[in-house]
Image (cartoon, rainbow, N blue to C red; front, side):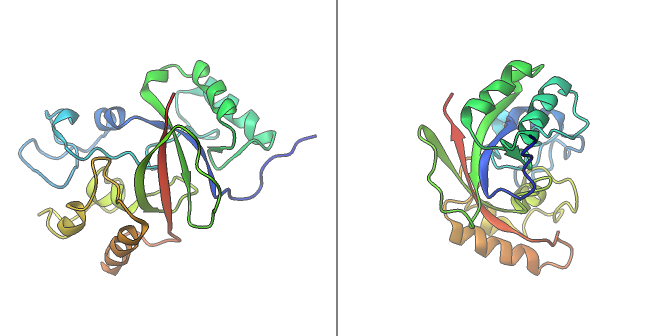
Length: 211
């Protein structure tokens, strides 16, 4: 009997690309001398950046995407059909670990866990709190932080790199906020701009899982 998840989970594990991989693959870097927040710069390596984005908007493995990780995608699709995953979120760490042997480049990925403000569930053991971010959570896991200060894909940001600077300075080393309250303040300011991405946002708590 198929028990496929047909609801939107509020917590779970994701198999997300590492920051360095996203940086290397980013198709529209700024000029080498154009310093705008933590946006990749042509010819400049990721090691010089003090804030390295580690949120959920890191192209996590998706069962129905067109990524080259076909075998791993099939494993995730099977988990979803069995009701053990949904919206890319996997519910049990043991099931997450089944995916890594199927990846072509397992070293390109890491395991993170996230929950949104609708969940009161316990956090996993042996996890490191990375921070908080405003995100759509489901779908492509869009993050307002990433899209205006780290890896712009939709609207970009202000060319001068000053509009969001008060909030950029409050990002921690993982380019996330230290508290849900600051994440909410940032989201209010972000949405007050006429050109930013609207949508149903939630504050996500993001944790790195020790392997």
